[in-house]
Image (tube, rainbow, N blue to C red; front, top):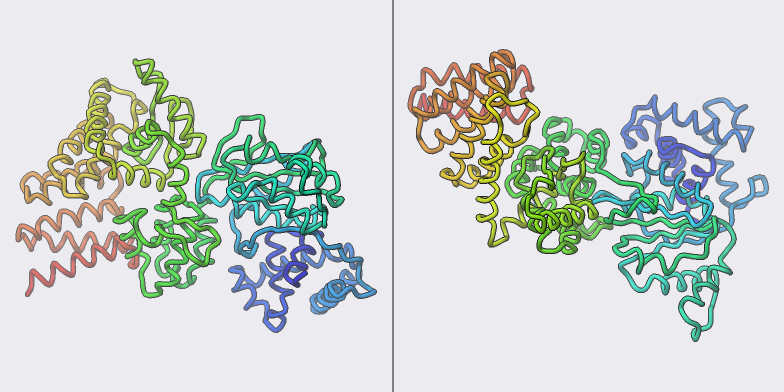
Length: 605
């Protein structure tokens, strides 16, 4: 057993928390023996005081099995603990008895100190596997790229000491699972069943003669429970635990641990482990925006982090612009990193699920991708045609089963941002794309017409947003004739729903004005920019980033029409407000400053 693995076992044996374990392992690594606390703390991305506190907690826990630690001065505790562990590792007479080798074939994993944001899930998983009175089965389920296999790997490594009967890792997508089990038993335990026996009899022989102690069986990437798992489970025995990773959602008879995306703070922490901290500090707003754009998906975050690490001169702002333009086709997320164990890029990971869907479900996924990136109000019961209603029910069920759509409440669904991009990419590849978009717009317009003149604000809250987003899609690709009526409908609907008392009305005014400016219809654009500016000032206050944006847009219009004396003070106001509210290094501030610099160069040359 390697020293690092030994330390990990000791940490688990003494019930150290993930934070304590990271501090303990780093402090006791041979290569770190000469480093001071400040240097180690920096490598762990914590303060020196936090490292000292965690090590104090470590000493207290080890003192329960090594009392001399409790009577030592603080300065001598580290060396006493190191000597005690070294003696134990080498089998010294004064050490506690070593644990005999636990057989396992767990695949490589990232160092556990770099596995962030999943502490609660690891604890829940362990509790679920320990509570069953028979063969405990728990499925870790979630969308592609969420980190199911990595969670299982980390769990198996961190809890190896709990499974003295071994950890047997099985690939559900590899050769026959039964053969994998038999090979593991032959290699690790020398259990040789006669070749002329049936597979079921050979498996039974293995289970009956398996090494004593609790056993963890990991079935990775299960796509068919009845074929890949059920036939190979041992007879009911509480010492066998089965952990499944899967994209599928099972019914309630099988315990499941739904695995979602990372929390925002954990996503930033993961990015900090991959990208130089000073680089992130120089563009903190952009770093957060990248995490948001990627929907906090672990696979996407790691791919982007590793990509940035290979491109030291690339600014985060430039990368974000490119990601927004090329989306899932950008090289940062399109292909797997060869240094990562996971072999797929983001779109490739989603494609594995897409390939399991039928043609009707493909259509429904593409249709849903046209909605705004928000809760999607969609009631299947409103579909009058029974046959069509049943097709939609089956499609929604398929999407939910593969975690490609999230159920929020009855008739309310949500798409992950990158899943939505993937569906839109598939829509653009389809020969039916224009036909589907036209039908979608027609339906949204009909929905808008049905909203009463004095509506409740909660009534169809995202119809206007959906129309606006689709218009932005057309606008960004230069399809102005198709974008204009959608922008107009979104504005009309928002005015009817919200009157002049909501920033979304200003957004619609601004978007339509941008279209008019792009098509050189300056007379129509100007009053709309002015209305948006006044509305934002009234609703948001004079010093707000959206006010700066409106001032900048109006200044650009005046610049385009040669009205330089009117443009300059607006540029100055926009820049001052943006620097005040967002900071001098924020992307929006830098964009306004660039516009102002271009204006000065042109106006005073």
